[in-house]
Length: 455
Image 1 (cartoon, helix red, strand yellow):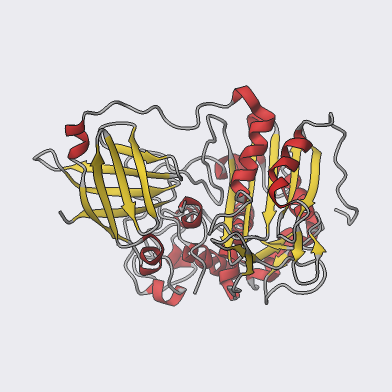
Image 2 (image 1 turned 180 degrees about the vertical axis):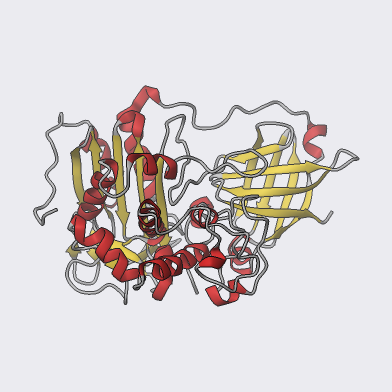
């Protein structure tokens, strides 16, 4: 089964020499990052490769843990990790290069390049790039072609791996060669990314990290391999190293992949038809972190989780490639959490509050939202999150209970609540009698699912 990937897992709950970090005061950034990995230091555990750039210079480049528990090979900054959904940013750049060359238009209909989709004449290339096409997920491209869009294009942001598999077919049609060949010719070879490419089989041999999962008992086990093939690689089937990712991001920020104005467009939040902005651009996640502007991407697939983020106002770039899955949780934070700990070590007092302000609501106001709600979501999502969400009032606090446990949800308005245990937000839609007739559960602002009230 295809990995549920980012952001579902996150919400639940050019040359060969090695990178050399610029000198920095001892005990500052390096010490803060080393401390993150202290719980597994000296143990036979997977880990991560971490690179930090400040003002265009590498200030930290170090790997932690083992690439293979079976061979005791250590992770390095040249270890190959599966990128998972970080692959989408590479795919988006291939599309944007073709746009700059005048061979493709962001407002071209999908039907022009991949005919046969239900509603394909209304779906634009920019809708696919921004996850606003209404494209279903957790199905094959062929199944998606026969399925009506989940919403009108541009109406809702709903993260879809299938949408990026479709974009790969668009690339193939316009470029006249396979996705992999175009990736190699347009990005990898020009930038000298020798250790980046498409996953064809389970990584093996020296220099390739194996994927693992933590167990609830505190151990670690090999992860079952999730294969990606053909155009599915465009959504989550690439691999790379921290060194190659550094070269890629250096080139991107220097305007050597697409023009600066194109990158600015790609890293601006999409505006939906109702006027509100989503948490995605054109191939990049646009989710501010504690008041800091951030763009980048995360990924999670069968024993690997990855994250890269650029903080333009801090002149900071962070890359984290890890060979342990995001769930179940273990002694190491996720790649995204590691990146944010790095930001905290650098930005310090410039960070805003971790959570939105909590408004005071009376028990009677909270009571309106209590009840049982059915999660309207594809079966793979419901299998992880559960099919029901129970909201109950305990004193002056509202709690949400589902398959993965119970957590308090806090009001930021009379109708919008958030969790402090993950990037989850629930927006309730009041009925005429004042009760909450239904709601929308949002994960990181990238996936939305309807909550239908049952009682």
